[in-house]
Length: 119
Figure 1 (cartoon, rainbow, N blue to C red):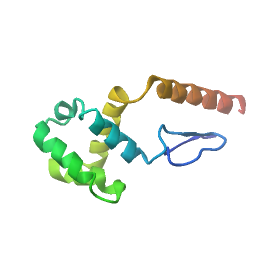
Figure 2 (tube, helix red, strand yellow):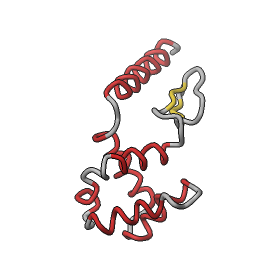
Figure 3 (tube, helix red, strand yellow):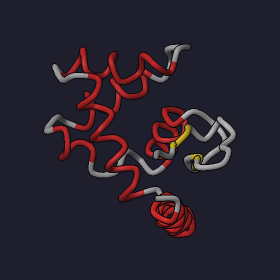
Figure 4 (spheres, rainbow, N blue to C red):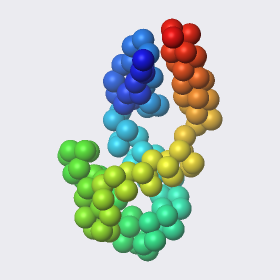
């Protein structure tokens, strides 16, 4: 048995949960963090704010949002996965609304219970 978690720009079905937002996660995370002035990212990455914020904003100029983490990673010598993990984690701490957090947790609990009841 399984369930899926889909990007916010994808519509979920039975056994699926869509992430908050109506756009791809990269758009949501980068834009929300930028609007919040990139909270605590300089400390999280261990890089000065001037350089890091420039790298993040330059990456957002790339038309293909799937390349944003790679572009930042190339500048700061980290993998795209490492960049995404830090950004997503910080977004959850600084930007994720409590109502969305509760919806995710409650939906996951319901899906897990639904899966267990089918066993």
